[in-house]
Length: 256
View (cartoon, rainbow, N blue to C red):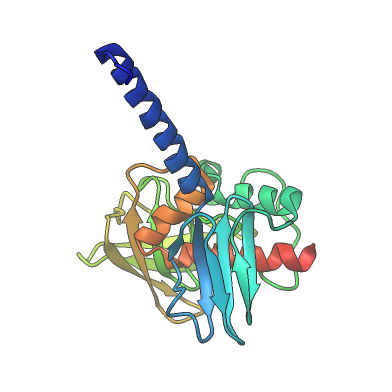
């Protein structure tokens, strides 16, 4: 029989707690988030669902599920069984860089006068399908968006060749005109006239399209880890941003 004194017992308990903490941290880092789901199994794997470490996704014919994990984004096409163990070989250099760029914050600091500073980009024949950054609010589609800083939200439009105008209205009757300069896709949300409020829905009226609804969900604390950011967005129902991550998966896989 071995006798253990109080100091040894406390040291043993601390060691066990540390090991358990590392295990939980490893599991949290390895989990995945569903960012898009279509097909017969969409109810089983809905958009925003968090999957534990080493989860196995079983899909039927016609299923298309896009997941985000520490290795980046990945599209799973059924039928089949897919292990989310991080062993999938993905284009880490391209996909990882694109993911980091899309989720980076600070874009609002470049739009003080409504345009990105620097040489204007050359017009393109086809407008992009969505913002290049998940923190930008797409005024052509609307939806629910998580907000990191209510004072520096950026409004994005797909057509930037010509000057653009619109009107932003809040539920309490506040209203502000929004004007993009020719060549600019970005404009800072007019927070002085129409404050960004957690859980509030706004209407954006566009001269070239139907009115859209924009709902803002403020994130008081934004994680530094990209997967944790996606998980927090999923919890708040920020599906518009999860859609952007799903589009990134399709773009990088098509290009790689």
